[in-house]
Image 1 (spheres, rainbow, N blue to C red):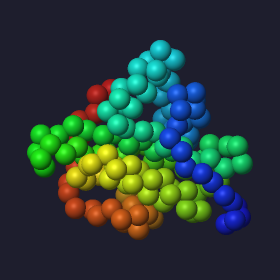
Image 2: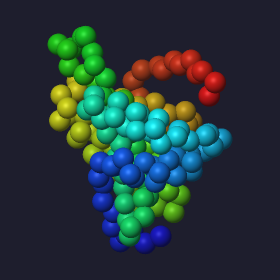
Image 3: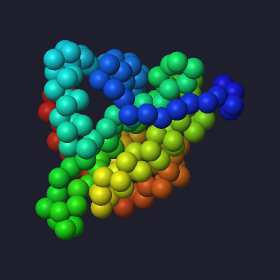
Image 4: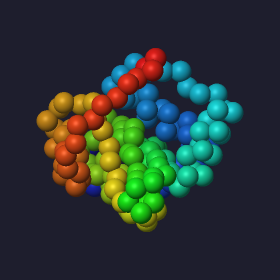
Length: 152
């Protein structure tokens, strides 16, 4: 793909969630069932009512990348919230063109503007290129993550 491709980053509107889910379906895992429209409305309302956003990168009328920023209430750090970035996905034919970096820059900016004391993300990838991508975007591999998955 040409390095001259242009794209924009915006806060996804409710009616764009189908595009977001289409990008999530491209993620390197088994495709899961999509929530029904009623549940999507609830998720979107819950996410945005706490200051979170779904970011969507667009190019030539096509959605080419996304990530979600969850803003989490917090009792420490003077009550300042923190942000968690999830579902960083760029369409395969738009990778290596700065779309992912631009999404992360916008996510970091949104987190800072929301008064967060930190923004964090986790990746299940062990690919050196993926880890380098996050480091080049300003993230530091500094903690050990643990999780319990329920029926995932």
